[in-house]
Length: 190
Image 1 (cartoon, rainbow, N blue to C red):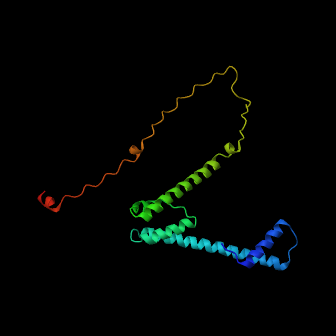
Image 2: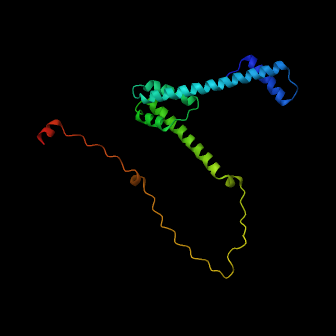
Image 3: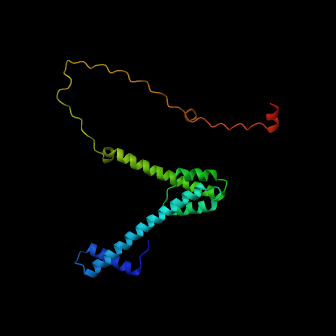
């Protein structure tokens, strides 16, 4: 986002007023309101542009491989604007990796996607463990009415046996290549 010279003067006055509070003149208040409206409009326009760019990216991706040049250019623009490549982008780039530009972009997108996943996992783990991150531990207190001195503890039932974790090759067996049909002359003879 770029500001004009007039907008920078208004911003400078607003920041000076925020640091050293003083009564504002009506003209300064109106200038600040106009600047706020301009910034809000620029943010809305950036959102519209981003939505258009992403929709265009999807259209080009769906038209691959015929739209390779346009797709790669749009993906570069989207990445420059802060777009996190999705699974569809990675799959499309993997299919096109024979193209040197697509292979280069695939390497970049894989790094960005991994960084994005790590950031999401970090946010999830922080949200699920607030007590662990604060370093405080709850104290355990004995409650009245617990087990009397002469009571014997009841045996606990055995825990069910845990199933072994399958290997990736067991969970996701390799895909078999389809057997090509026999040549036409063998089909006629058979």
